[in-house]
Length: 156
Image 1 (cartoon, rainbow, N blue to C red):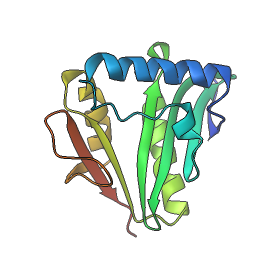
Image 2 (cartoon, rainbow, N blue to C red; image 1 turned 120 degrees about the horizontal axis):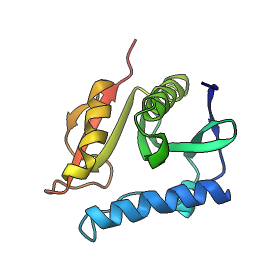
Image 3 (spheres, one colour; image 1 turned 180 degrees about the horizontal axis):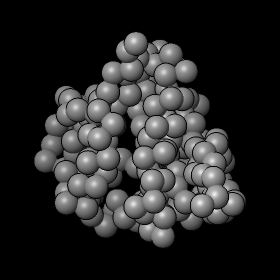
Image 4 (cartoon, one colour; image 1 turned 45 degrees about the vertical axis):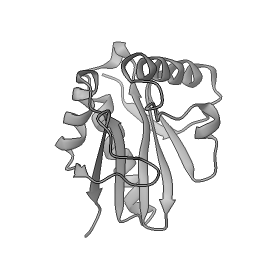
C-alpha cells in the first residue's frame, strides 16, 4: 500500500473544505444545537491552529488539527477520516502525528472534547488507546451530558 503522508494543509483547499463540511454535518446531525464544537474553515485559519491532512497518492483521507491553548497546553480539533478510509489506520496515524507535533512544540498536555453519544464511541476508543483519560472541562467547555473531555500528559 502506498505511504500515508501527513503534512500541514490549507483548510480552504477544495477537498479539505469538503471533508470538513462532512465533519460538521455529522457533528450537527448527532449533537444537540449549542453543543457542536467542531471548527469550521474560519476557525481553522485562526492564529495558533495548525491543520494537518493525511493523503495517500494525493487523495485526502483525513484531517486533524492542533490548537494552542497556552504555552504548555494544546487541544486536538477537527479529527475526521473519510468514510472510505476508515479502519485503515488513518486516524491512529493522525493522532500519533498530532501528539508528536505537540511534543516538539513543547506542549506538556494535549486535551480534547468529543461527544458522549454512541456515534462518538469510536473516537473515544481511539483516544483512550493513545492514553487520553477523562478530565474536567477545560478552556470554554462546560460540564454537560453531551460532552466528554479527555487529556494526556506529554511528560518525559
